Image (tube, rainbow, N blue to C red; front, side, top):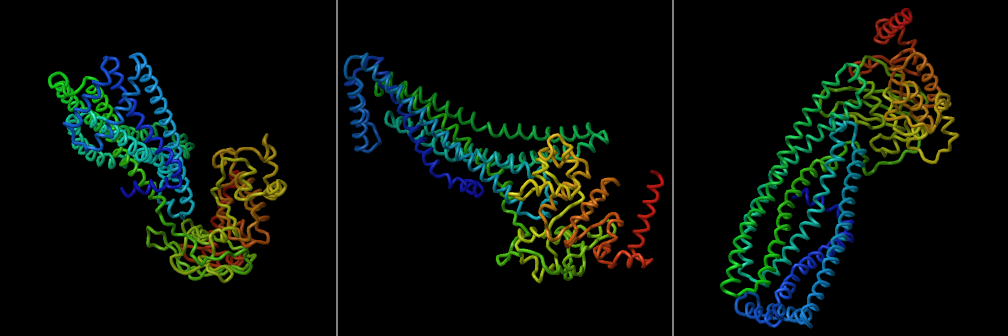
Length: 625
């Protein structure tokens, strides 16, 4: 129940809507009872029983055979007497007309109250769902990159969309069913007690059996519901992965394989849903059957009181039956409340797993803003390994970078180049050592302030399904169009942008799929140019491009590097000849440092071997072209 109460806390801010909804719920229950209780005088009128006879019988039954306190009996009799006097004044047609008007008014007001209650409760439900979903999404942005390496995208999407939707039912279960149904039960139970306490006690035999069934089924439902949410996450992941990799699926003719894999997951989900439905729907028919058993006993015993003992009027017995059978729907509904709470709690556990994940990368209380970079960057004995491995990715990294220097990082794949530059904007934190900017440990700088100083262009360019203009100005507000156009010109992107029918307003599709690789890179460079960062990071930004695109992108990169401190991870060594310093990284360590000429002079060095290998490859490719 801890998870369930935590879900309900999100409803606190909507307390005024809840209050109105609950008042309407109470009014609905009262009017619902009144509309049924009015059947007694209606039947008296139709059966042509006099008000005097009705009062005499009721008084006799209440004073001689009731467990109610005397003052309650007197109050009830006074109200009943006054109501009878109002109804039965005049002839039978007048009484019938008054009863019909009152019944019509009672049902009208009851439905108005029901509508208002549903509207205000829906406001609360959707508000809680909206707040929970927003909080989970906001918290995702606070989590470090390491979190996303260990989680499937489809699983996270499923939790934020599907699981949060399931939580909605717990709100209605609490503030509608858990309030309206008990109130309805109390109202009709009161009516039943006022007519015959013996028959009422007989009817209450059903409750203990119902409660046992509800508890047993609820425990099974929570476990099964959690498994279903996990399976839905699997299905979402398969869809996400297949759509993202649709080109590879088609290239390898794996459509049928993916279809079978998806069908296997959906069939498993289908079986789980059948099992859940079987368990969920078990409580209602069992409760109803028990109700009918008791109802049959009541009809027999009550009929005996009317036909033989004459201690109960026919109209009162029918009114009692109406009241008892009106108890069955709320009892059945209550039998599902616990089920829905358990299902919502299982979904809540998965949502709160995201919200409760503590970000490893966060601001310390004393973190400061650093408005600009003016001096140097120092890597001081930096060692790093991922959380799930003690094998160091970087070990004993020591170097300094002066403002305005261009630092190139080269080396074999998997050597730790990308990890090294990822430490600078604090995508990860070192396991040992520290990184210092202008004399301040970057862990003492506010993350937002730190990252504002930096621009990043990666090999895998990330663009959004928006216009080209919005992608260039991503994260920047109030920029005039002319500055956006100028950034695109410097990035060699302005020309191809204008070739599109809608120019800068062209929507480029998910991940920029409507653009070529070189065009996407130039949009990313234009984005970095507009941000105008003091520190630039290029992570193999030209490695996946053809020669023509590479020339255009490299020209744009050279403009972007001007007068900036730059870190370049280079795939093609020809692009970093003019770097201030080249660092060769192998197996997490810096094995060589120097300029291009200095490193080439060491014939036995790794850099020279890499250069010669690439030179031979370039000659081979040019010879075949």
